[in-house]
Image (cartoon, rainbow, N blue to C red):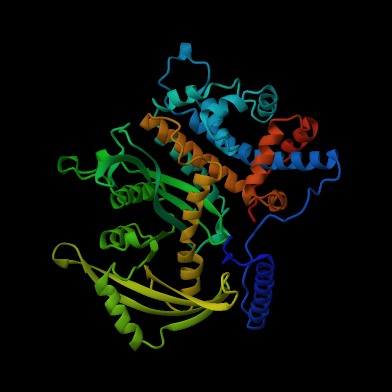
Length: 508
């Protein structure tokens, strides 16, 4: 005889779902009555295909491919000019493909979300794909094998690729493309580290290493770790900017100490300052960087900053903040933002001593944000109240006028770089794919991937494409472009007229 199931039956589950929807409706009404605006998550609309004819679908596909390719074509003159200046170590008599052609080819593979070198060789060399490709990019005389690109990247100075990337971003800053997204008139740059991939065998001298415990044994694991810097704006737009690879050779090899994220930050900060010597920057960092030397570098570079402060990071600063915040009753403020009720309190000019014998000192400004919000518990179906707490170190003194901008629009959007990393890892850019076991080539392909991602981000936030992307989603839009390139959809006569008109990139 079978046992009685302890799980809810079909009718009970149906009743629970109805109760859950009813509670969610009650909460929405309550929030609306209290003036709490909870923004809904952006999702693709759930409907069947809206095209009523082949002609209508053809128009949409051509508009999509024209919009995306025009963004790339607008940046192509700078790319070709700078890429052609990279020193080519190959024998000119045996060279079939120009260095700029190979680089454009490499960028296109990531723009189209092609997942591996073998897939590139298989997909992009198809006659129809090639015919459509040379229509948009006549600079491509012929398509190389992907191994040709890898061999070239293994021999050249791949840092030049990132310099070209930075030059494109600098041009957009110069043309004031991001002016409306600034925080306190500063460009917000988030910096964070992430693992690229790991292997059991040592395949390059530069790999980091760690011990992995497995039952009674431990084995060495070799991995690639990168410190990324992105422009992270409060509307969600995140522009890849610079990468700093951690390398075992950068550590203290005599004492068996390898490279670390903080050392990489010092190198990246130096490069960032050299590339943007006079740009007003706000650095957004997580709790790992709440350290005296990091704050000292930011101040020396005349950068503003917002750094996450954990309870155990700077004990002297945290204890002084807890005491003074209770005494300074005027340094409090309340907001309603993102569907959450916020209570801020801050203390300015806390002295922090660090270094040998604590001879160095920095004045820090600390702010705490406590949040409360209501949501429906999916298990119980009841309205529950949640809360959270955030603490940041600010470079500038805090007051009621700059609190919302620095904390909510600046510091809270540091997560934009983490979202960008997840997109690069899981949404078509193959961040965790090795592509090559040559360290130099691996770095070069990574830089090409970041360039391709940046161009796709510009398309995502272009006014001309916002309607199509809203209907298809970002990955669906790129899939639409790739399918169109691989088929006879492009209308060459219409596209010639469209591409010949003046173009200006306008962001939403």
